[in-house]
Length: 97
Ligand code: HEC
Image 1 (tube, rainbow, N blue to C red):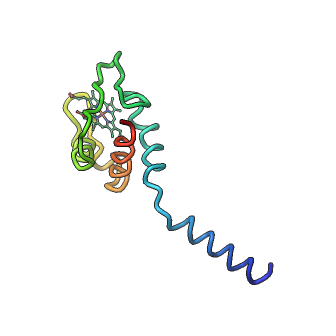
Image 2 (cartoon, rainbow, N blue to C red):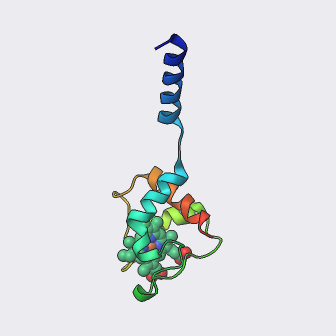
């Protein structure tokens, strides 16, 4: 490789390794952990009597609910997801409405 190519490769690696992609992570977490109850559009699984997400909920309150859950049907994710993962999934939920 020519030196410039090497520099470019190193640069691209650094960019992909350090660029945060919260929305995409949040989408992946939502699909694997939340979607079966909350549905892809956040409208809630009617058969399971899951309500739609309240419009206008702040990211902080979404994170708080995700962490603690709502007894007995909404699971608590404290210890299952990291704070950063809950933040990105909350940010993703905000994009649903
Ligand atoms: C097993 C089904 C189930 C799964 C999985 C689930 N939830 Fe829920 N969730 C519920 C139910 C049921 C409620 C409503 C609870 C109530 O009000 O009693 C709820 C409520 C919520 C609320 C409050 C909604 C509002 O606006 O009032 C948030 C936020 C939420 N869930 C986030 C999540 C996130 C984020 C995930 C994935 C990490 C998730 N939930 C996974 C069943 C689930």
